[in-house]
Amino acid sequence: MTKTLLVGPFNRVEGDLEIRLDVSEGRVAAAYANSPLFRGFERMMVGKAPVDALTITPRICGICSISQSAAAALALSDMAGGGMAPEGLRVASLLHAVENIADHVTHFYLFFMPDFARVGYAGQPWHGRAVQRFLAGSGSGARAAVAARAELFHIVGMLGGKWPHTLAIQPGGVTRAPSLRDKVRIGASLKAFRRFLETEVFGAPVEAFAGLSSVTDLERWDTGDAGFFLQVAAGLDLAALGKGPGRYMSFGAYPEPEGRVFASGLWSDGAVAPVEMGSIVEDLSHAWMLGEAAHPAQGDTRPDAEMRESAYSWCKAPRLAGETVEVGALARQVVDGHPLALALAGEGGVRARVAGRLLEIARTQIALERMLAAIKPEAAFMAEVTLRDGEGVGLVEAARGSLGHWLTVERGKIARYQIIAPTTWNFSPRDAGGVAGPVEAALVGCPVGEGEDTPLSVQHVVRSFDPCMVCTVH
Image 1 (tube, rainbow, N blue to C red):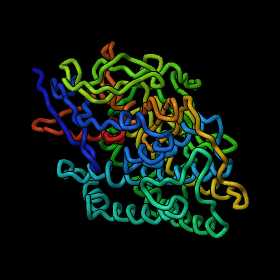
Image 2 (tube, one colour; image 1 turned 30 degrees about the vertical axis):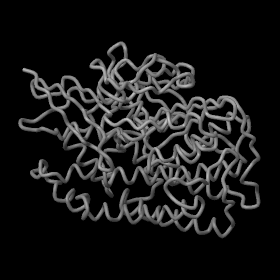
Image 3 (cartoon, one colour; image 1 turned 135 degrees about the horizontal axis):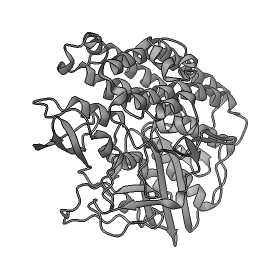
Image 4 (cartoon, rainbow, N blue to C red; image 1 turned 135 degrees about the vertical axis):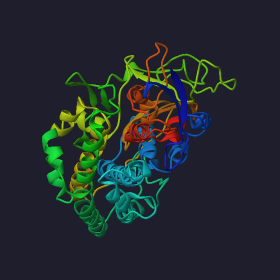
């Protein structure tokens, strides 16, 4: 006998996600992810001046606004045929990396780990520690993470003026040229954040965690909250839960004059290939959208006010060469070729995603320190860029994965603006071929206990992808 469950909300920041589950014999037989709130930022952009993208698109999200800002600035820069000043590009990437590493820590302490403090796990030997460290509002680990995050964001205040929704990143570079004194202050903030990571998160130097090269090495890690997570993961077999499509995509993170800090590419069947940007298509067959499937450079956003019965989400279904891909921290580290991430790629479940995020925290801290050391205060941080009619694309890596902005400007006004956010890739509905999106497919097989109306296993899978639904439906 098959029964249907409607579960949600999931997010602990905003809850615009519903998932319909078909449950048979105590397991999820099929899942349908619904993004139930249409916002329409892409439509707002039409008719606006090109520079308005720098003000409007960051307000898609209060969590990853620098990601949106960087994507918009790069799209405008691409359209203009110019580029950011080299040192401006470096500072923009530093700002972006600060936001992403803070986002990862927030996700781990405030969004993902609190689920293990639930009463449903009261019989587990580790439950008391989970309550002490991660219970919402009072957990000692959660409180330490919030304090460390606040101190880290002093960097954004110094270079960006404010967070969220800074206007510091522009098509030609950044508006604040950091002085030598600024570098010292930024270094102090990074040192304090490293201390938090090494005391609370890893219980060891970040280089030690970044140096792990196998699943065996990972399973031996037993210090800090990372070690506690691995203990929980082993007890609940989170390695086998929520396996993704096994295809990982990254647009490449943090562009610098020397290249991107984390590489771009598509990992599939053990090999990395370039991302064929022309093969991206947004399928609309199960979305409440009007029009035909199209590449985002030619796409449109026309909501279906009738909400036809054959559709079930405001989220489009992006596909790369007709296939689903997973994006996020694990995907970035797999594409970048890190040995531990490659070892986790085939596993591809909840443990792999969270471990990939922890790995990226360690590697990003090291990268931030290097990026800061490379900044030359005497250099120019802004290049002159003349905006003109044309097309442009801005590709970045937000904390949750690959983010792209595509725009067309005609007669000095935006004629088309399309965005594919990370959660759009991961939480897409079915396509015309009936192929489920990554999260929908990952949920199949999740155990559902007797009387569970919001299964714990389902929550772990969904949160391992770290959804941001306001970005999804922008």
